[in-house]
Image (cartoon, rainbow, N blue to C red; front, side, top):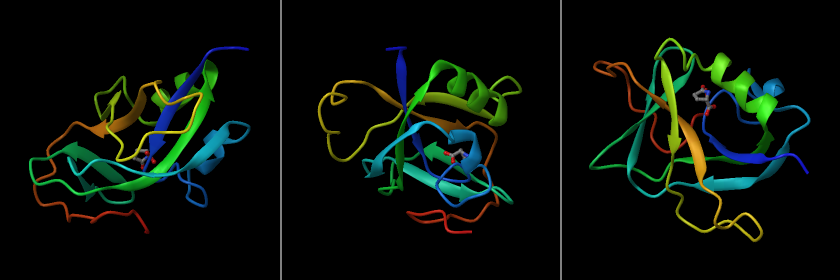
Length: 125
Ligand code: PCA
């Protein structure tokens, strides 16, 4: 089986949102909460997640994706321009076997969020 990667999505990539189609054909593993180490900001039409001392448990979805999908997601989220970087995220509860020990990554927003509203725990726009 080709290598799979675990991604936590919290915004426009979630089911029912405008970029969900980029995950078509991949495997939805379930909803998940992060540890309370992050804040999510409304950056306009999409959210941005950042590390925070006074963080919240952010609600999102864990997906298992193949390498081609991961490359596509990096393009969509503009990793190359520095808009987001993909890095490990800490979830509140362990995932089921057999993926329990596989690191989960998310897209972290890199520019300043000064002036952007806090979205709370969940992106619903
Ligand atoms: N898309 C990615 C990062 C923020 C966004 O809107 C996601 O849904 O996780």
